[in-house]
Length: 158
Image (cartoon, rainbow, N blue to C red):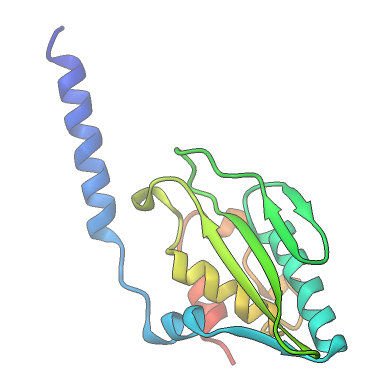
């Protein structure tokens, strides 16, 4: 009986290592989009981008929105065991007629997260810039729990 907790801990560690090894690197186009600044110009475009950001956070993260105002959108923080993503989005005024939208996403331990941080960030930016004609074209949080493929298909489409 004394060895049972050690065996369970060893199996858990092996499962985490396997999950890390099984993750594929993100394609270059995903990394490029995730790292590209999200900038809007003019009141109309910036308002539209911000409304899309609010919609994305409310519908494509795994947590309820905690704060949503003219400069910040945040979900509740994911617990350590979570596979779902939480988000914090801010709107930075640049010049008189432009803003930069920043996103920071987080989930539980990286090996357990449903997708990579870059993939989720790229999905957000593509959606905000108008990459989906309708919300139905983007994956649901439940679909993203099982595979990164829906995000990849969405991010890679033009």
